[in-house]
Length: 170
Image: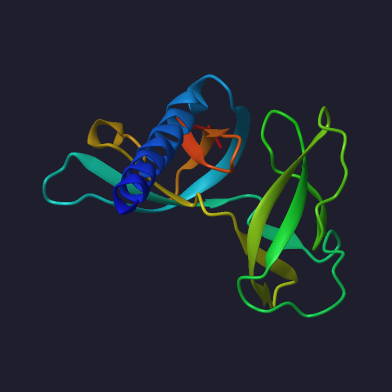
């Protein structure tokens, strides 16, 4: 009987690994496309120089008080649902809530973020989990302070992949 359990668990583990791998590979074909405006904060290039790590600040990371609809004070890393207008560059937040809103998917998109803090200058900071990403070191034509347009692919289960990064002329 133990042998049957062992083979069942082994087969189950293999199936889970295969499904997760297939889901990540299918992100190029069956995913939602997002274009975000960002400023490159920091570029880290390790000594082996194969991949550069980019740290960016999206325009939707800072949400003004006028758009913030949550009345109570939130703890650090509390999940919030951020509704953003769907246009060429997702940069206009229309609503922030603690519950997933019902939206028109043609006009808006809902992003899940983690609340960080309220800034004294009158905005709230939210992180989405894709503020840092790695790219081949040949893409080092971008430097700190550059404004870029980042094309993200968001998969069915919330996974994401950076597809392209383009410099925006200021």
